[in-house]
Length: 480
Image (tube, rainbow, N blue to C red; front, top):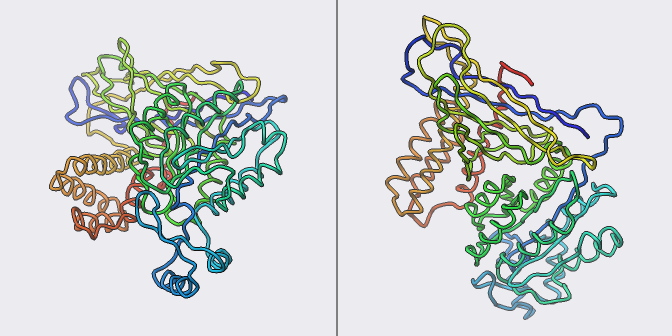
């Protein structure tokens, strides 16, 4: 399967005055859409997927309302079918006997939904796709390997049922220690990597990781080899900052399942994205022309994020975008400081894209295209593009939210309130009143025990996708 890219470039200023310097930043939005080129021998790129599942105690807990919990507590106590213990270093209730069996018939656990979602994912795989499932808690257990799936798929589904029912052949504990699971998952990715395939680690967790430093080191090793990591946060008690950091740094996706019933949908979205991926290991390099300077670049689609690593070499600024699918194109926002230019259409900058093509017959580097950012220089009032202006405003809101998070981590709640307040005002200006209302509630609850963790996670997940949710179509200036 050969692939090309359509690169649409739109500037925030349709024209700028001649022989003068702008008093405000100039932005460019580069929309990147992969296009599969006609190929009679094309085959779908094989997937190499490793799913790392949090199997700590809370993943096996029933999700009950207060009323439901009181009812089942009463039933269990009357039958002496309840035990107290710990889950993720907190007190927990374990149901046993007939009470447990009855609850399983009417209520479901996060793990049951995860297993169901993995089962649906398995149904979509082709004969050349590889999949591995690894469970972690205090220790690690390989539920099944890619070789197991290739030879004994029915037995693999049976192993998933054991994972669901907490009947694994080994005791892996009840905590949330992820590092060893990441190392095991990384080894599996390396073992089954194939030429031109799409490699992805999917991490699913509902809790606070207890070995964060060791886990970040393991993630760094996986990231350094060019593998992307998608993370799915379940419920309202996981560390969303940790999971988003993993996804952003590796150029994967972060998905949020506030309700356990949404786990299946998150996995469906992920596998659909992977199966429509035609471009992998995409890099962009930018430089200014005619005295212009590239000041900053960030990803705004499919989700907004700041590039963890930006490389500079001579006059070029370079960053890794990663894999791009036809179902979920990418866009980057570039901030440029132009010099004083003569009248006419003038080159402002240059963008170089390099990528590999996903597919069994792909070479190591199969794409290399260049685009020029042109600006019209003329006397008179400056003209601005409303769509780019809207994207810049939405990205500014995202940066305010990120700055508020950093301030809160430092314990500077006044600064956090200030940044969230600025984000709220911008949200009202662009008509995002629902998100603005949630941010206002968050400001009021900062530093108090009444802060709603579900609301906070919803704010962060929604803010990241403010641009994608608008589905803004930029007007093309240059198409490759």
